[in-house]
Image (cartoon, rainbow, N blue to C red):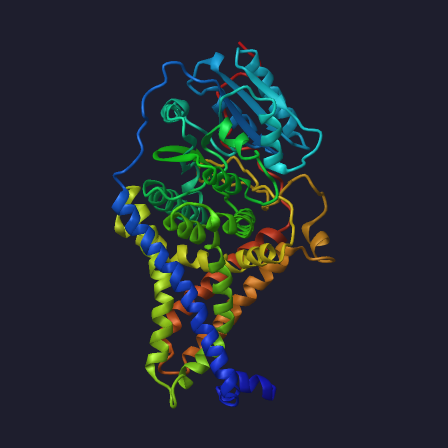
Length: 540
């Protein structure tokens, strides 16, 4: 072992330079403080939720004459779920002469023919359904929605992504909120078709429940702004067009349009009691891709919108909440910096005072707890509202926290890309058609038919960013093991060991499962799951 390595594994390197010691200490405390501030904001959201939970919106009245509704189904290479969402949309309980369905299909594979055939089948049954295929994918999903809107006749527009399965009464339960002419959008809660598929999907369900049950409810019921989630909601066409329509200059066009519409004075409604079932990404690579897009898009919108929001003639309550909402993914970047500082701090905690003391350790642990315990309370509250017991949620919390830590490196990269203006294309989340504990065998690819070569032949010569990130996540897990070993060498650092073990578990879980998906030998794709419709291939 080299002299440098020996120095790093002892406290010699940190005692040699007081300036370095204090620079690292201040940096660590500052990062912990930033994490703690966002943690306190989560406490605030939980308090705000319970304070305003009984202030749910009710329709002003019922429509005497129902409006024409356009249902938009944007999709791209959705062979496993295309039939399912088309069938669900066509079964919506709404007068047929007042509903038109647009299948906005940008597919470049066999999905296009699958969707086209289904549209022909339903059209033969009297449903007003149009199959729309653009000449190019300009603007991706936002471009498809705008393209369809230019051809739509509806006063209201309902949007469902391909992995959603709206209930037949969806429109009946949401339409009357638009009797208020100030309402521009109504968002419903996401439910989960395949929550029981795996521990990963169970954890994702809890993550999303926190967002939809606590965040959306607290913001909307307290008259703060919240966002359309890109699907499972309705827009007033006038609200979209009055603010310039859909834009594709960020990866989360739904958030962008939401804030522009609310800046223009449109009122948003959230309905936590109306659920719309959807599929959760059952494989880790798909989950990471989705998280990267959401994180990067949020920071892009923060950079674009916050200056305008702070100059707008709205309350500081709205401005402050918009700031925390749009910048909250920065916690992943702060967390990654904190992790990199772990080892130096383990040595430094003995040097925080002249001869080392407990107060430096306790300060760091308290700040860290403010950022992590708040997350536990946040998700415990959401699961309580879903009817789950305290113990049921408590069992899932360690894995939930580990995944939240493990995904941090992936999302920190998204934050950095947004901050430096690095443009990346819109990468859709692969859909699998899973509805229970059935397994698919796609290896998490974007397009299972993209290549017939073994995966290692394409990855080894020029590693993809997904492979690089998986290797880095695994390396971070090894680094955490080193930190655990170092913490056990000091009496007043052992209190950090449980947190370090959680971090190590998170990085190893995300990194190793990602490597398994990316490097596993190519397997035969499974048949589409859960898309049965009960309809004959030809009209009766």
